[in-house]
Amino acid sequence: MLSVSGLTKRFGGFTAVKDVSFSVEEGEILGLIGPNGSGKSTTFNCVAGLYGPSSGSIRLEGREIGGERADRVCHRGIGRTFQIPRPFRNLTLLENVALSAYFGQGGKVDRAQCWRLAEQALDLVGLPVDPRAGTDGLGAAALKKLELARALATQPRLLLADESLNGLDQGEMEGAADMLRRIRAERGLTIVWVEHIMGVLMRVVDRVVVLDHGEVIFSGRPAEAQADRRVIEVYLGAEES
Amino acid sequence: MDCQLDIFFLEAILNGVLLAGLLALLALGLNLVFGVIDVVWICYAELVMIGMYAIFYAYTGGVPFPLAALLGILAVAATGALLHWVVIRPVLDQPPINQLLVTGGVLFFLQAVATMAFGIEFRSLGIRLGSTGFADMTFAWSRILAFVVALAGMLALWIFLSRTFLGTAIRAIAQDRQIMPLMGVDASRIYLVTSAVGGGLAGLGAVLMVLQYDIYPQIGLQFGPLIFMICVLGGLGSMAGGFVAAFLISQFIAVGGSCMATEWGYAVAFLFFMVAIFIRPQGLFGVRG
Image 1 (cartoon, rainbow over the protein chains, first blue to last red):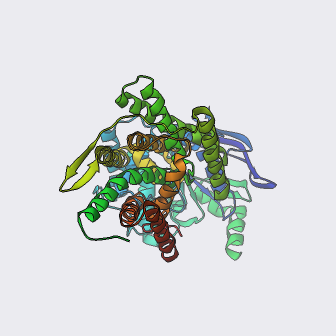
Image 2: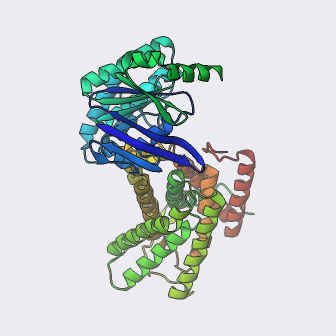
Image 3: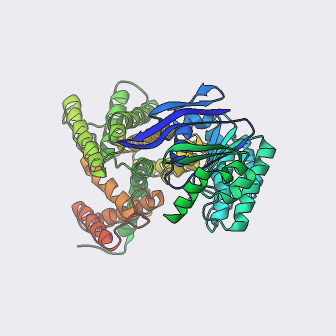
């Protein structure tokens, strides 16, 4: 469904991502992991259209999307969440999500439909669909859910989830992981999940791609990754620093 | 100083309220653009001036007034969009002082062009709406009309901002520019629409002003600083703040002008502004320091 090949992104003299290649099959949950600064977020931002790649290609269902504007990438069916939830505080929950539903589909869907899609998305992640509910007083877990609902409301076929578990306790992490599984089952979504914590992710993903210093050092099944010497070194090394 | 709590004092207060409607409308336009794009159109009053001339030439050229008014609004809306595309877009990522200076450049450019193109004569549409009396007080119909239409214009904008997705995006984008594209929003389009709406409000202001004031190339100098001051007093970017500040400042001008001389009204208003900013630098409703 998504195929990234030879992706390189330089910022001035610094190469954040170097010749990264991986592909995501339809219906799969792919984990993209690596320690801080390994280039996962940069890779993500290239796919989502926030950065144009310096070289290489990004194809969604065979069509080149590398270097396309973020809003166009969104219209093509890629939704994303942010590492740090960024709700619009002056809008209600429902407005936050409905705005995504409307613009995420290029403004071509009628209003009533957008409100319905927003309610569905809130319901799917387990947030109140009360039209008066605001974003005040939402905890870390609820904000992540809102972030997810906003991405889902754009009706993506591919969901890019960025560090969804950061700042959650163990129980909330398990809940979030189960939710991604359930969303895949209900919506038939393909998911790329970026995370630097390996734990819960490994239980849920079908495959992992491990990045270190901007390069792919491992690609395969989660169980194999946990046994891979380089992956272990990278993770132990990261914990020491 | 001659100030008594008599019927003329009440008349001054009510005239202040009528003036506030127009000022609130213009402050709203400036605040809208600043709130969304984060750039102060220091040349906002000059857009009003362009609108007044557009209406003047359309009307004296034989176009009926309502149609001329509509043309004026559309002309200024287009000018607003053009201003954004040609002048603001290239400096969007530059420091605020550059953005301010660039729109300041537009201010003097528009004044100079207007002087060359239209001459320095004071022009008037020659429409007299007359006035109405009520318990010894007199109010010009043109002012009452301006007040009612300005309120209607603000109400229409409020409905647009709160009831449409485009309006909701305009309210939201001020908070977080980066995330918008990831929700599928083309930010440059939102900016352009906002600029056109901001221009349209200046155009509506022009319609209401041509019925009350003479038109000349420097008329912006009379209103521009006042509108800007109202926005800052209310808290730049705060639409509610601008609304309240417009009513406050208008009272200083109208009551001060009635008790003393008109110029004193302005002096007291600006003095109040300075003291208020010492005490509350972010403005009455402002959140930015």
